[in-house]
Image 1 (cartoon, protein in one colour):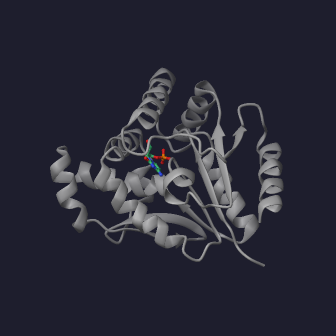
Image 2 (cartoon, protein in one colour):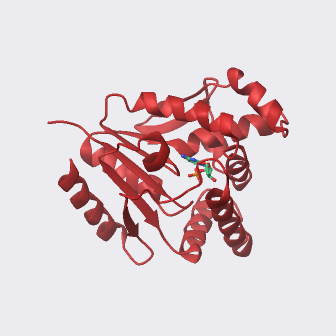
Length: 220
Ligand code: DC
């Protein structure tokens, strides 16, 4: 049976990674969380106090981003160090959004992402997967949910991780990040013409997965 590429794009905190992970498991495919790659670079720039674009670009040859499996879960690595827990903070998310506006950072990561898809059998999520990384992907999904629903999910996730977020701040952050992701000059988040839109604001996880599995079975 031939394998396909599934490209999943959408706004932050709309459940892309949960869906992509579940679909990869269902299909027996490899899952790649590209947001984690931008977050790893964001973390590097925070640790090294790099704020100027030129300094960030100059540091790229010293940055290696990879993935390891830990108890079946994918963790991102930064120069060999498992940084999965460090990258899941608002601060790193915001920095990731900032570094992701730099053309050279995008080219650096897109090249790695394209290599990962050479043999297909991959589910990749991000912002530019169906438009830039794999414009030839057989199945492209564009996920959306209202900002309030996404802020509530992000808030619940942070609480679960032991953090004490302020809901208004989380909602403001979701709106800011949407704005930056859709208005940046380089590969802004947009729906590929041939992407299928799934608005999951009012879908349960089960309802949503049924829609996605049905689509996968139709396109594979
Ligand atoms: O999906 P996420 O929240 O982990 O992504 C963090 C940031 O990285 C997000 O604000 C935008 C950026 N990003 C991107 O520009 N392109 C991608 N393919 C994935 C993420």
